[in-house]
Amino acid sequence: QAEALMRAEQLAAVGRISAQIVHEVRNPLSSIGLNVELLQDGLERASFATQDDAGEVKELLSAVTHEVDRLADVTEQYLRMARPPRPDLDPRDVTAVLDGVLDFTREELERAGVEVVRDFAKDTPPVLADEGQLRQVFLNLLRNSREAMPQGGKLTVATRPVEREVEVQVRDTGQGMTEEVRRHLFEPFFTTKEGGTGLGLAVSQQILQAHGGSLSCQSIPGQGTSFVLRLPRA
Ligand code: ADP
Ligand code: MG
Image (cartoon, rainbow, N blue to C red; front, side):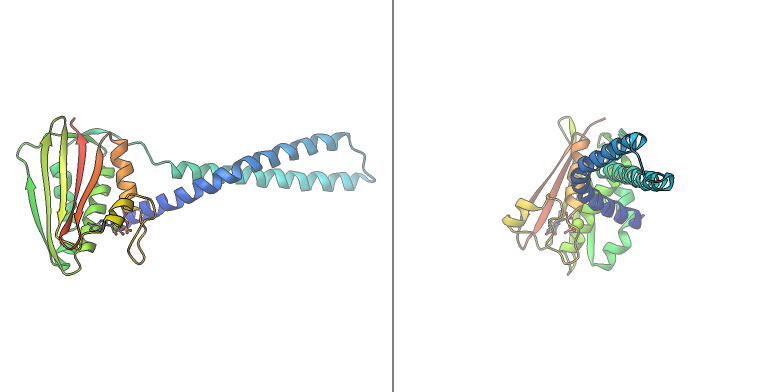
């Protein structure tokens, strides 16, 4: 499970970079393909010294066509990967999803000296969400909080209904962040960690926006950080 999530992050990274490359490669590629086709047509009318020469040129050109087609296929695949899947929306009990994620990360949080407090509002209404994507968001937030509390601390996860939405708060007593970091934290590849991907929050925000929800952050350096997530009610 953790590995699948890591792979999803890596895929997202590969996807974003490839989307840029694909964008640059596609147009010249289709122009190469078109020109090779024209050359092949021209070949039919050209005269060669020998029949062998004609055969050789045809073979070379068809090898080029073959490789151009293959490249076009590959770039198409990468582009598909760069577009995140649309959420599969169903009514979900967000507290049940949170319970599942917290159980899944319990050992890891315990080992890090993180005390977990669940503060779920009674009768939290169901939300419209893709459960797998929602899990990924919560895991990203919990992982960031754990990493912000290397000496341990307290993690509070709260839910409450707000107007036509449900609000989930993930609050930690970690190192917090400077205003400068806060300004950039949702940007893809922005990280302050050695070996960080800088994708957790970018992907999470993208997921929430695709749900018609939102993700925002408040933080005080040296005191802690609070992420507020909102999802439309079912
Ligand atoms: P990564 O975790 O790979 O660095 P993220 O997108 O998850 O990428 O986070 C981006 C940056 O936001 C982090 O490098 C960190 O500086 C900051 N950040 C995120 N969550 C927290 C938090 N709970 N406390 C302090 N800083 C955080
Ligand atoms: Mg992260």
